[in-house]
Amino acid sequence: MTSRPASATSVVDACQRALGLALRRETEAAFDLLDTTIAAADTAADTVRHLTESIFLVARWTGDYRRGVEILRRMLERADDPTTRGWITVRMAILAGAAEDTELTAAALGDFTIAGDDAGQAMSMLTMAFPKSDLLPSAAFRLELVDAARAVGERLADPVIVARADGAQAALLTYEGDNDAADAAYRRVWEPFRVGSPLLSSEVANVVLNHSLALLSWGRLREVDEVWDRTRHIVTGPRNRDWHALIRATAMIHLGQYRAARDVVAPLTNASEEVAAFGTVLNVAAGLELSATAPDLDLAAESELLEGRSMQLGAMARSTQAALRAVRGEPRPHRDLGPTLRRLAASRPRFGWDCIAVTLAELAPGEADEVLTDMWDFWPAGPRPAVQRLFTETLIGRNDPYPSFVEVADRFEANGEFHSAARAMAHASRVAPSGGESLVAHRRALDLYRLTDAERSMANLLRDRRIRREPGSPTIPESQRHAVNAGLTTRERQVTELAAEGLTGREIALNLGISQGTVRNHLQHAREKLGGLSKRDFTRFK
Image (cartoon, rainbow, N blue to C red):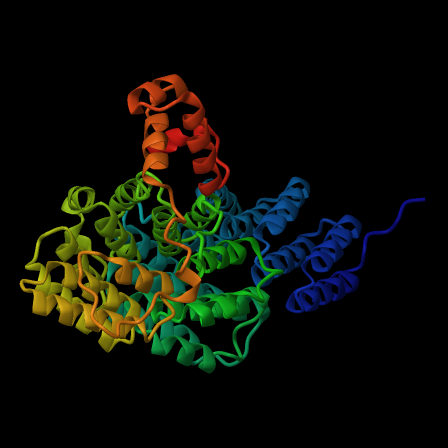
């Protein structure tokens, strides 16, 4: 006997139950239920379309894109008509990272064109248009695709296509630096929304998430919670709730509230891959200020994953990675920042990369000056990026240093970003034209640090022998009392740099006038401090 295919009613019921499980963060159970339903269901177009949408929503609500793409790929093998194949493929493209979505979207568009499916073609164009890792061939071309897709959505009276078009337009305007128009476009999607289908709610929720990330980068930190408070009825699924927590934690880090940020991130233990990756980045950023030793991580995998999802998130990850390497005393801690900026330069985005420029300018001002030569004319737009630009220009020697650093500090402090203000005043204290002005800047930097949890940065300032300590200066925070040697020693750095050049242990010993056994000991200590790297891995520091 052969089993009969599941009825349409049972498929709908199973899909609804799977969505309920997803909302309760029971990700595996939701996907397992859909997998079982697929095995028993027929291949009728309506059945496959319903299952496709449910798999897509479970993946989006939970953030488990990998499992969603895996199941959709198996469904694609059973699909025989072009419309069905197109809808499966375009959902896969939306969930996939930047490395896969171009090929998938082109395949979906081909199927929809053969089938004469206007809605499918519009959704494919929007998937092509939405920015992930770059804006090529240009933002203007992508906006043309958005306009064409929106026109189809309006003609078909399809609110999902229209909402996705408005969201894509807002994201592209953000990367073009037209912040006012972008802000208005984001709000045009979520402000009038009250209720709608799960697919429509999912699109609107994604726009809310992107709007919050944009506000964060623009420096409008106080508006982030306001947007989320006004959209509680829209945001669906644990992924969006987790991202709200991460965005709040990032705002706290901007404000120097590292303990609070760490507390917000800590509960996100059963999170999706991308949430876990960015949560790790934020934990490292907090740990750099609060821990006696640098975290035993490299953030390479997290940075690569986030770069495939968002230029902005990838930039934040790379900046934190460089800061981590610097604290550990690695040779050339900034080594990935220049290549990252050069990759971004091809797209000319006016959003999200200013944090890399500041970090590179602090660690390697000469390289920053060279890399940024052709990037100043598309510097990110907005109040916070404008301060970041002044900070970067001053670090690489383009401005009169003392008054410029003081202006940077004033502007950061006005936005409540006391740690960044303190960093600027610390720089000012080192370049002040007189001893009295240096002491005033030093005192102000310490006062600003007292408003934050930036314990490592305060300890570094207190240890700076170039600046005379005043009576009554604060003591080094307890967490940093034994952290002065957390990075490589001078000799460990010398040995590591020579190993990176390819010298053998014997050659290093002869070069430095020490025994080969001492070389081995220094390399072993360096490997432990740098996260268990092998000697072969030291070539990455070149």
